[in-house]
Length: 239
Image (cartoon, rainbow, N blue to C red; front, side):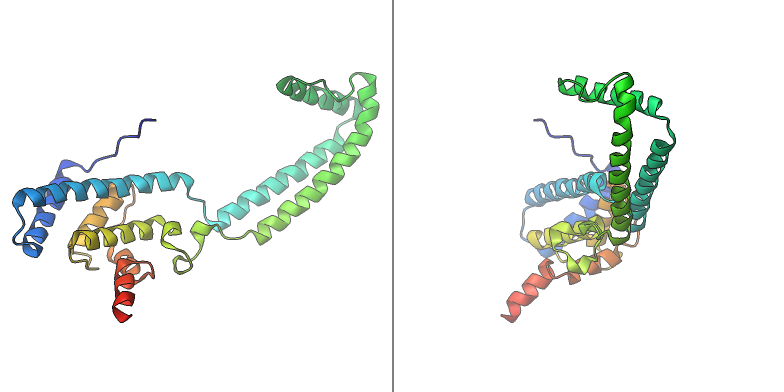
């Protein structure tokens, strides 16, 4: 299966990051050949673009706020309750035909005989069908109402401190990925909003569709997370 193309940085962003990465590498690795720096820079930029594209994929599965999730469940309950009222008000002849016609479509889709009676028989059968369905739907609607009140937080909506790195919000997981990339490349990681890490993270956010200029907040959260490279190295040093 073909992989989707990675959305690239624009030329201005690419040139800006390349220049700053090159200066950092020349300072950190004074004996490294220029062509080796160029190769590393191209790899870093490709990885950063991958992070940005990861944000767009993440947004496709990201849940709505807890309040909006509850509102949708409450709306579902209200619609079920509304359907119950319509079942109560519809006369038996009409409801019998409705039930038969609905089951007719189910039978066609499944390739099985229609289990519901037709004609006058449907008018008589639908009385018991109505009562049993009203009872079931009423209890189900009650359960839906309770679900709205008791709905657990989605894993992604939980406080970041309670989550491992792979379940973090997109802003923090991306910042942690940048922090690890800097460690892997041997570059100094700082949380300043004007530092090289901030330039890289800001560019990733923008390419991924996040309008975040003050990225130092997320860089600090990344540094302080228990699964960050900074925290891991610190724990190793102590032991």
